[in-house]
Length: 112
Image (cartoon, rainbow, N blue to C red; front, side, top):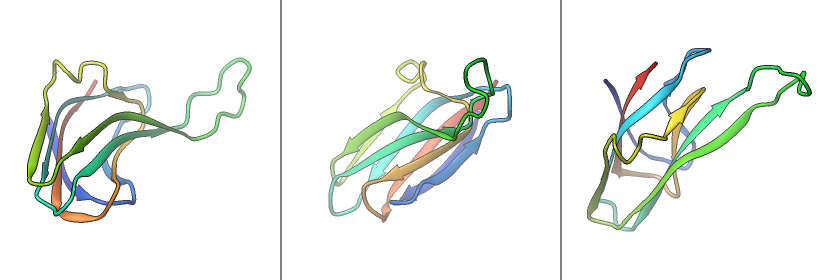
């Protein structure tokens, strides 16, 4: 299992990219919010679907795959069992409601 550590930011921050015809599975999320206010962190999946019948020119899609709000001074953890349905088809990114180097997000994932 690979991991990626980022801090809270209002611009989407890259976690990992899923190769074409693969699936990225998120197996753990840990958010440690030591900032002065609560933070909401969302995980996004950004991808362009394959062309198909009825959709010859698909467009870039941004799908919210997970969201957690963590009070200031607290931590949040989600394990593999609670994340079993969180899968990414493209670029997995984290985005928060504010910029804070005191709010750390660690995501564990695998590519299948």
